[in-house]
Image (cartoon, rainbow, N blue to C red; front, side, top):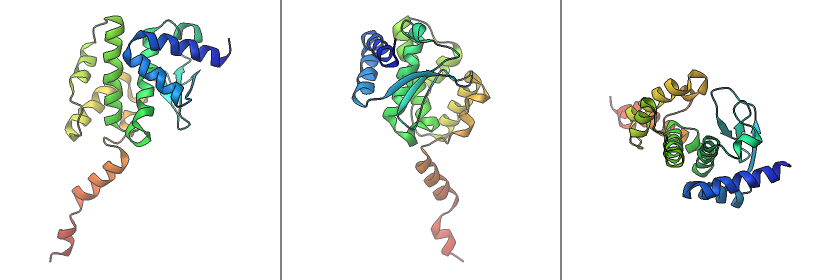
Amino acid sequence: MTNSEWQEKLLQAIAVSCDEGRDAANHIRAHKTKVGIRYARKSVGAFWTLFKSAHLNARHYTRESSLVNPRAWTLLIHEVRHLQQGFFMALSIYGELDAWQYEWRVLKKLTGEQPTPLQEEILSLPLNMDRDNLQRARQLMTQYAGKSYGANWLPLYPVHKEIKYWLTRKFNLRDLFQN
C-alpha cells in the first residue's frame, strides 16, 4: 500500500469516528497536509512540522495499527488542532493545553475510557491566558509526559504575546522618565 493509499484509509477511519474526526480529515484534505509515520522520542505520540505535515510516532504505531486504533486517531486530531492554531499558538503552553483537552475529550467520546486523575486535572483547567493556570498546565504536562516532552521549553503564551507580557510587565515607560 502506498503512503497516499494508507493516508486516505486513515482519513476515512478518522472521518467516520466522530464529528471532530471528520473536521480533522476535512482539514487535512483541504490543506493537502501530508500524513505519515516517523520515529520520534518515546514521549511523543505524534507531531506536526513547519511544512504542514503530521506524523504518528513509529515507536508506537504502524500503518496497520493506525487504521484501527482510536488512540492514533485522536493523536492525529491533536496535531491537526495545532495546524489549525497556527505556528505561534501551537508552540505555546496555551496551544498545548487546548490540543490536549480537545484530544482527550475526543478519546473519551470514542472509547468511553475514563481519564486518569492526572488527565482529569488537565481537563479541568480553564483554557485561558492566566499565567498561574498555564504554569500549572505545564507542570501537569511534564508530570504526565516526562521532561523529555519539552513543555518546559515552550512559552506560556504564543511568543509574540509572551514578549509583550515580559516587556510591559518589567518595564513601564513612565517609570523611565520619572526622576
